[in-house]
Image 1 (cartoon, helix red, strand yellow):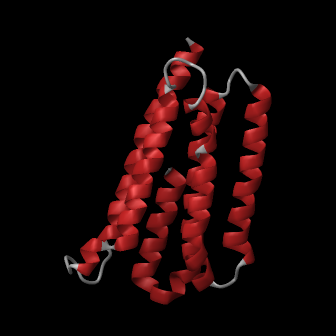
Image 2: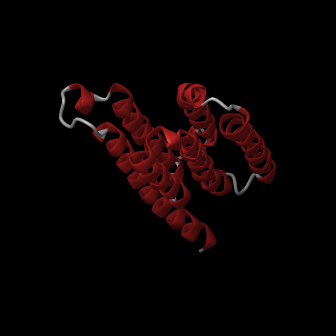
Length: 180
């Protein structure tokens, strides 16, 4: 979360003062968002599959390989910032859907009650998707609430940051329950 917030603020600062010269730094912000998706998924895999170490290791390995491939392709291999801006939403959606696999597996398990961490992870994914959809449609910009700045983007950033913080509390609670 801290890496994503820092890179986002850094890019916005450069964008405000340097304009188009900061376009290359936007790749850093995009990469940090992908790292945020990866980092939010790992705790749920570790906690939800603690009794199945091979499944845990296999999913973490496969998810890490895919995340690194998407990250390298997006940030390093593609020199065009316009192409990266076009492909970034698809990369986020594909990585986000892949991150939901352990949650779906845990929720469809045979236990009587659903694990609370899986519910929190699913809730975080839904709210983040709603925040991204809000930014995609840009309703505040279309009705002319604020000219010259993008309030829908900042609403999405607030939703992402809030969800990351509340999810981290759920992770800490789940870890504390498992160690007790």
